[in-house]
Length: 175
Image (cartoon, rainbow, N blue to C red; front, side, top):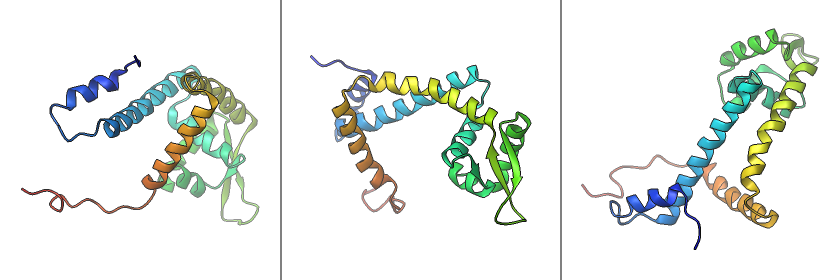
């Protein structure tokens, strides 16, 4: 008999209430949401040990992903934020010695944000700890299963990333 998780109980509770509910769709969506919440909680718990707030780590992470140097506008786009909102984050990270503002080499009116050695070291140390939970969870799968899961999730995300119209409440349902 296959092991059950909390989502199985969730689906069992909802099936009598919503007889048309597809238990597989509900199971996938609920598990994905619960997994995302779990990873976020663990990330926040681990980051406390490094004296990081999540938004600080996320900013360093994005900057590291740009090889340690980016414009504030690029960081804002990567973080899905308005550019002025990034300024306060950068000010705090600069006070901690994790980033520095430097004149742009291509435009005298612009500044670039650069990850310092201290910022890179703090980011790498936190990354190592954060990766432990990812591996702990995915060690439940063998390498072929992890590849299959990654491929299946990619297919779902390709659809999720496509523009879609807002559903018309009256189009599919009679009142």
